[in-house]
Amino acid sequence: MSNPFDLTDRVVIVTGASSGFGERFARVLHEAGASVVMAARRVDRLQTLADELPGSMAVACDVTSDDDCKALVDAAVERHGRVDVLVNNAGTSNIATVADETVDQFRSVVDVNLMGTYSVSRYAGLQMLEQGHGAIVNVASIVGMVGLGRMPQASYAASKAGVINLTREMAAQWARKGIRVNAIAPAFFPTELTTELFATDAGEAWVAKMTPMGRGGRDEELDGALLYLASDASSYVTGTVLPVDGGWTAV
Amino acid sequence: MTDVAIVTGASRGIGAAVVTRLVQGGWAVVGLDLDAPETQGSTSHWVSGDATDEAVWEQAVAAAEALGTLRAVVNNAGAQGRGTLLAESTVEEFTAVLGINATSAFLGTRAALRAMPEGGAVVNLASNAGSRGVPRYGPYVAGKHAVIGLTRTAALEGARRGIRVNAVAPGPTQTRIMDAVAESFDSPPEETMRKLVAANPSRRFGEPDEIADAIVWLLGPHSSYVTGAVLAVDGGLTAA
Image (tube, rainbow over all chains, first blue to last red; front, top):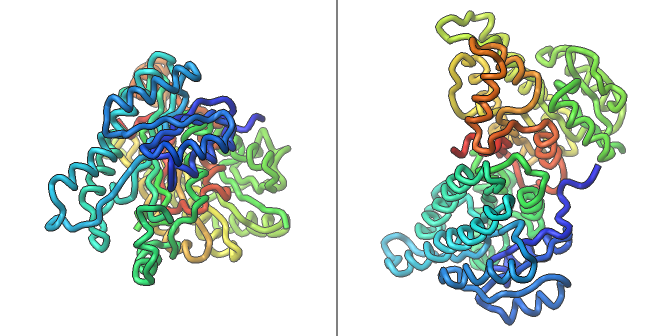
């Protein structure tokens, strides 16, 4: 039996690939056989990574620019002729209470997390509709499913909730066209967005207390969900939100 | 020590597909079902019996422990009932359908929580009927909702002991349950099937192998931080 998780020769776009989950995802997808098209604003960091991963390419892209999102998909198609998988990973957050966060701050988080996901998905989706196949994996968050309070970030919460129902709606529209759209909802993993959280004993203790498994996620613990949803192993899965959260949202 | 899995409803459909994949992956498998299976050759041990019977679980766990270390339980046994409005259902029907879907999953989950001191994983088979209503299948719907509540609670109780508990929620899948459902309506089965396909965003049923891939993933090391989750494998049915 062939390995249903295999991604040999699949063309995969990953946004936000210059750091955090995105850089890791690019490496994991490359390892699984994919030709990875990596996008981020910081193209110097991306190029270093691209030099390490044969067959991959780096594209400068600010996902808040609709033109950039179109150019990203065009670049992938020009190089490879198609886009098999899109991983919408680019994201940002702003830790502030609703009382303190400004409307501009709120809007800038929504612009990256929700509008960015929408724009790249739309252009990739148009290409996938033409091909008649494709898979989109959105990196959402448990913060798009539950409130936190302790770590105030209404802009992030609202944007990720938006991503979750954008996922369902795109899935419903495109299911019969051969395009699957799913979301991963991680809890807290060590990334640039959680450096401060894990830097304090109180932060780490809070994560342990809130998580039935009693700990945050480890770097490698999103790899499986990513490969599952990106590959043929999930050929009948669409519109689903897969929490990778040590049980946080099962409570 | 060999890793051992117990799979209920193992003789055909999704259960048989799970057995095949686990055996290919190097697991020893204790299969449990009412009838001897078509694929018995690939299981390491077979228990013929009712998954709602505590004594049958004792046999299954003993068989698993004789083969190696019990590391996984897949509670796949289920039945849909005859397809009757709640107003016309009897207590006996309700209890029986709840039993085969929910009590069997409870016993399998309990066996895992008791007999997996070194940790492991449980996957319970829920359904799209575990999160929404389906006219004429009230007892089945109640049973599958129960499976999801059981899964979430068991996940919380098992989390610090290294036992992960998740559910897979298939939509309409090409199995004999779907054949029986199609037969239960007044219109011809082909007509019912056609309507069910048309109601699915992907315009097709799932294959047992596609459900099995999700189950096997949830049993393995690549889902090590996933617990208490309900993974829909339904072609988008519950997203729409």
